[in-house]
Image 1: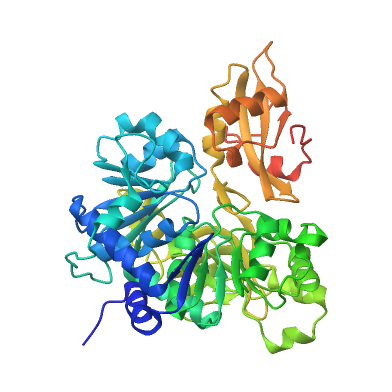
Image 2 (image 1 turned 180 degrees about the vertical axis):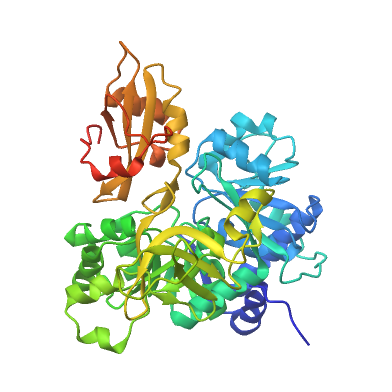
Length: 527
């Protein structure tokens, strides 16, 4: 009698109950759930005819469009593995990720097709390239046309048996190394996290979700499936713009959205005329970096929206804690309530066990002061890193997933991150590897040594800043170094500032002491 736990069950149920309800909006295009799922079936059939079989990987480089949303149903129901890539990366990143994942089909939106054309001769594992935005014509003869393939398909395909521990997606995350790691998410991981989202932030068919969060980010924090499970309405937003968010919120009667803290800042700082008439009571889920209490307070006081913070990682599918509201919070002042909302909170009822432990593996006291590392175990923790058993063992070898995040536990049991044990920089919800940026800057002819750290940034939460030791007799301006980085890195990875120093602080063994640099006040000279 057991049925595998998979988000494809949400598709089955919603198709049965809500086929005639409007399910997806993308600009001027609107589909009922019945029509949307028919498109998903047709694309599954087309992929199967192209040779995609269970276990094959299908990569996507696309913003928040209906085609990207369709991938979260059409690919998994073939038993294939979805690989949604960060579209903000550059061609060299795409080359590595596509090769590493072993993707045999790559589906690309128009804005990124030139990047793929520049590297496609290196992608020998890819059998087919699909242009997502084209209909009957496209960027070149070597591109298949997505809409044409859907129109030609019948929707009939062989449905393989799917086990809940089968891979559903590989989500890449930068972590602390110069090359991203592929997080293997199973059908069970995704189902459990989706149900957890619904349990803590209930939705119904009356709700409308606006896609301000990129779908490639940990599968849109599983809202790609959660919204469908509720029979609520998806409203796609290919490119974030604060004025457009407020316009759509009013036009579509939006009730829910997710946003990194930097997006909250942009919304809070939008012109007054854009905010005018915005619906009150809209639920906002935030994560990606600890939000400032003042940002939460502005959103709630000025817009009348309700902010809830969740915490997790791509490796935990992604949520393992939520700053759950309690009745006693309601009587607090706005400032006090915002300070509590800025914490990472407590375990989701579905995510499993979360602990904060010291160096000896002992739980720290709940005093709001004693630091430790957040560790977790449960049904949302990944199956491991794709093709990287050593990295998997390093973070999961003792039966717990070690997050690398330092935190304290308050007397009420709420966890709050105080720092990161890793050197990853989180800027606007994007993970930036300091090692990757440093490796590039060391290629500059004038640079002898460099250390990149995250510094506070009012807009992005934090931003990368480079401390540079120049070679004898050589130098470069901040503008020259920034231009050099922009030639080779995705723009969000480029340091906002550069500080020349005579030497970098180091330990006796020669290791750079980045905490010393973080404690300083660098001159952000290249904003």
